[in-house]
Image 1 (cartoon, rainbow, N blue to C red):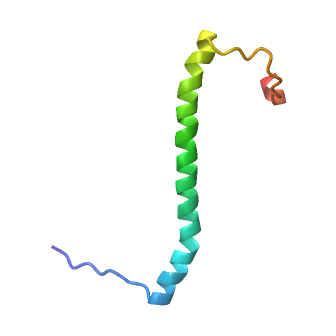
Image 2 (cartoon, rainbow, N blue to C red):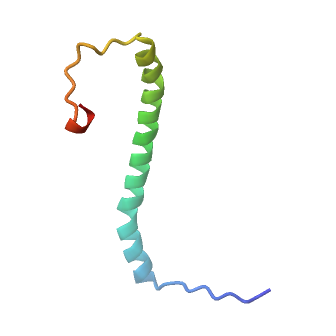
Length: 68
């Protein structure tokens, strides 16, 4: 077994990193929750749209030029 060296930063560097990383971690959590919600909504709506159970023919939906 080899001896491994672990470098531990000083307290101020740890605090500075935490202050920088915390908003990013919180954003990741929020975006993860939103993605889960979007997947759930898609999974509920897509079968209804494909089967015609939900009619979207009268919706005024702006499409990007690439889709037209």
